[in-house]
Length: 332
Image 1 (cartoon, rainbow, N blue to C red):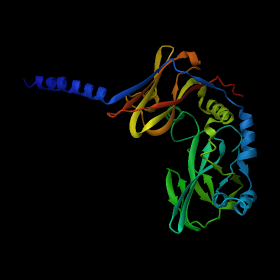
Image 2 (image 1 turned 60 degrees about the horizontal axis):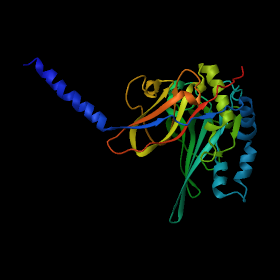
Image 3 (image 1 turned 90 degrees about the vertical axis):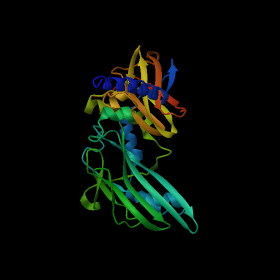
């Protein structure tokens, strides 16, 4: 009797676990999906565009900041746009090329006061450390890296707080005077930063671009540049993926994404969770993932897409885009 107790408990436990899993898992399935083929741009043109359009001068930043015909918010953005210490080969296009400086602005109006928070991000084609590229491709559906550089909050014309992102993704407070234009240097393989003085070396003045209206991660030329660097540095071909962009519901529920290609299943959790089964992402809102196949698929190769959501409540996961890249021609 003592020996049979564990077996009896297991016999009761396993059906309960199976019923709970079935009751709390919802699957969204698309048979014979419509697949978009996206083309690569030109990596050489990407470098030319970065040098001609993403980089400016300190004099130009100051001119916009002091232009009375420019909106007050834009003047504030340009007056406090940070500078980056230049390093040799930064724009050679061999690895981790800076794409530009992007900002978000949060504005709150109150009785007799106005609070503005500016966040400046540097975007790169890749990173040398941090999340391994295969897991990054799976979790975010691209090889790019975007890092917070500088954040400053104003109450009217007074600086309330200022931070930068130091190694270890630590936000470090520092005393800051409005308009003094801080200078930073890359201080880690995954693009965290340290403060420097302006005369420590040549600096790069990036043209601040609104992150909401300019997203470089889908720019064909920037994708081509990132693809070339990923192949050079990691021997990774981004055309060997199926990309799925979807909308997760407001409630944060774990999801997994799978595709059946030429009769074989490929699962996101195999990369994101190192092969462990189960839901692989807990995300909210719009998200994009990449599922590696090991070869360049054609649209007709993709038989089925499944998104599995772990939730007891009804979940509606909408797929916005399903696409592949044509086999890129990467210049040596």
